[in-house]
Length: 270
Image 1 (cartoon, rainbow, N blue to C red):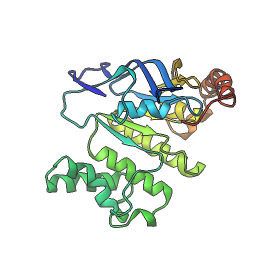
Image 2: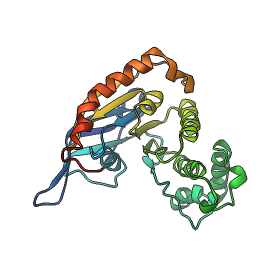
Image 3: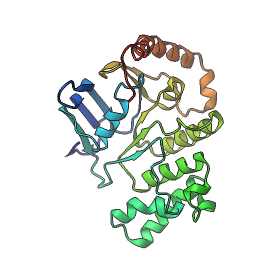
Image 4: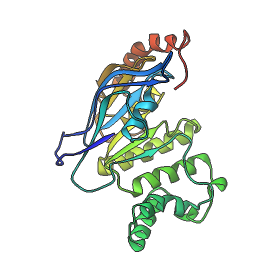
């Protein structure tokens, strides 16, 4: 990841992916991504979908600075506020089992050297907003999967990142809880319009949450389509009943059907 300085402006690029390729190994290298170009604007909610093994998670980790491209570059532009550039939420929660809920949420603030009183106010605010205040002193092992994912999201948001990166954060949850957390995430995003990049296998989830849905091919991952979501905001669970929702879901599946089939003919997991 190559951070750059860019003044905040409506519609300005928050992330630019330019000609990115990713290879693993040298002899008989596995090509995870090839020739990926993508721009995410400030304040956009962009969802990445594609078959298993297409490099969605790899691309997200490049945006977070956890992986480097083999070719090309990933630019994360600062918005001029001095906030943390990116924060990431993982599918497996990624929280520390030996720390309480409160300590997990304040971890990034402590690392950044935020004064104790300010960090406490910030943590208390996010615990309240995500319904965790009554569990502040609990440990992850005593929490449900949904509560643990709330802790992970609170920890990411507590550092006030310019860009929030989410890697299938609700994939392991049951359908009812997934719906609840989707609505909570929508409410949080609609309140502050933070830039979000969200990886998911669920076309329905991508349409409900995103401003755009970026469709990736089977490995090596390339961008097949970049489709706007023609549904007004604010959105809720009832948005799924809109005719435009069903039409876009069918369009996305028509793009992905052959790509998913290709994963059974020599593809591999992400």
